[in-house]
Length: 203
Image (cartoon, rainbow, N blue to C red):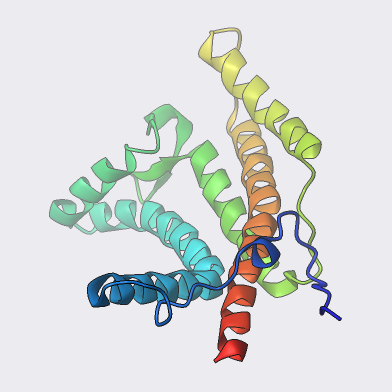
C-alpha cells in the first residue's frame, strides 16, 4: 500500500514528480554535475528561504533608518549612494517621509510600514509556521483596498493623506502579502524537501 502524503499542499509536486537521479540518467558528466548542483541549490533554498526573506526585509528596514544616521555623522560618501539605491523601490518624497537626526529616511512612511510589517509578520511565520494557513485570496484582495484607496485619492489630488494613514495602510498591506505568500511558499518548499527525502530513501 502506498504511503499517504499528509502534507496540506495545494499543489502536490512531490507526488507528480519523480526524483531525478542524475547518476542513472543518460547525461554527460558536465550536465550531470550541473543537475546535481541545481538540485542541491533548490534543496538549500527550500530549507532557508524564510530566513533569507526575513533577513532581506530586516536589512532593508535597518538600512533605511541607518542612512540618515550616517548622514548626521558626516558619512555622506557612503550614505548618498545607499540613499539613491532605495529610490529604485520608493519615491522618497521628503514630505511623506520620517526624519532621523534631521535627515530623511531612505524609505517613505508607507514603505517603512510595509517593510516593517513584512519583517514582523515573517518572524511570526517562522515562530508559528506549522499553525499558519495561507490567507484566502479574497481576504488578500480586501486588504489591498485601504492602501489602494488612500494612495489613489492622494495621487489624483482629491485629498492629502496623513502619516497615520500611510503607516496603517502600509502595515495592512505588508502583513497581508506575507500571510498570503509565505505559507504557500512554505508548502512548495516542503514538497521540494519531500522529493529530496524520497531520493535519499532510494539510495
